[in-house]
Image (cartoon, rainbow, N blue to C red; front, top):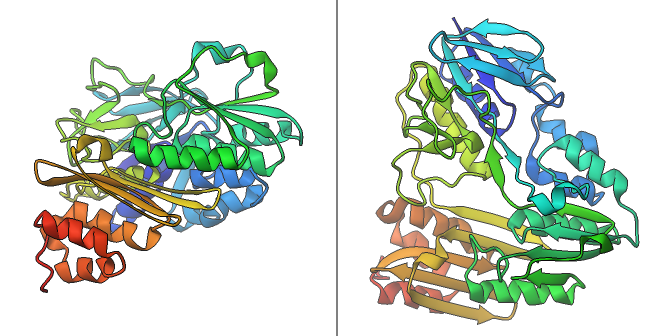
Length: 394
């Protein structure tokens, strides 16, 4: 009796915690191609910027594996998985059978063809971040390709190290997947004020003018070891809301997995929080539970150049728009067919968590809580009142 976990990121960590927390006392073996322990990927840009040391990236996981009695097989990629025979093998030749297997193999960055021959960097892993940091020196010109939340953190890190930075994307605005165009324009103006050169909605840049190129242009799930005759896949390993694949005893979670048949916004791949929810669910059920992954609205929060940004739901899916700006604070909220679609917030972190909970729990979240929050922002409160979200009398 043993459980095998493939991968060593957020989903894997949560799977381990849930397994042991659920009373699973048998062997747990973890396979990973990386030699490094688990880490929080949001700290990589802080390391590049010189704000934290390399050891700080791992400090939360120093004794994690010993405390949870995990047998590690690091530094060798999983080469094959036989879902029918319930065995897994890595490139080093270690072969093992399992009762349950949780695939948390993550995803790799997508590097468009024009950057592949230019020595472009990516920062999905610790080794990639180390390599990039070694190339940084004041006065160099850098290109960051990808106007994403990850991309803007790289821009900030390079600017803080004294580089001249250009941010480029074929999309016409920042954060095309999470920001309304009105919010994006405010962010863009702020970046230009900080000296960042923007090349948005354009292609064909002369790459020879840059000393360093960093690509943040999307991810692709790491599922090349999967036999698609045995395991159903699409844009990732297909799982139900319990993180179960079509194969007995086989689960998947995190960036490598896609929940089949889920409504838009059920859970957003590519985010640390999403990976943790999915990993936790897989671990609970591998330990004998029967718990569905919670419905989680799309959400992303980040702080860059002193700006707090939050995106909740799909702000671009609504056609009924409320917008408010007061000094450095800004919000835009949209509804579709009288239902809240999504919102963007700038420099309003004190209410972003409440609004995320409102989207997730709806009627379960007390109107009293909303009233307390919206007392700080009467125009937002009025917008919710007008649309019948709550009556304001509780």
